[in-house]
Image 1 (tube, rainbow, N blue to C red):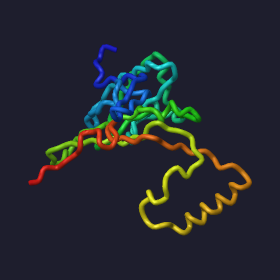
Image 2 (image 1 turned 120 degrees about the vertical axis):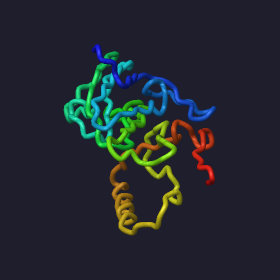
Image 3 (image 1 turned 45 degrees about the vertical axis):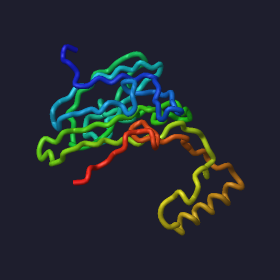
Image 4 (image 1 turned 180 degrees about the vertical axis):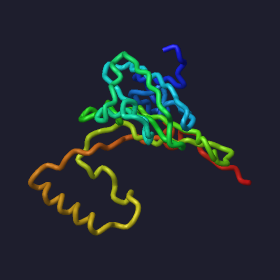
Length: 212
């Protein structure tokens, strides 16, 4: 491994301060949420070292990338796991250009402390080879929910939903309720906290545009 990696990711448990009174313990990339912004150049081979400092196998999925399955990050497509307390070096040609993200692709099943229920997600930007665009400011936003819990549904008030009711969907819901008198409804996952770039409403830096 003489070649220096373009980026290094470390998977480990840590804490996220969503607000002064809301500190979450979860699994993170490089001890932060969101994970570090990774920049690549379209079509230039890039090398990433991934260290897994946890006790369980892990996967990092490069969401939206047209890359070979051996490095894509999906076990069902043949990507090898990163072993507990081990590491894996991968290389690929990033494409297409634009804003993407990377995240864990471990199947959590019923464990709300694994997979996408954790804080393992980060922004990724691929600089276009041609036509870079004209802009004077970059703003990357990562939206994420935290503190998952199992529920039977109905935790969110109906008036929180936007738009007019759809008759077909209402009929489907009534039919499901009728069936539920004979068998139990399945569990859903609800969340107690929501954040933008790791901060709850009122606790992060606002995004503003100066008047011109």
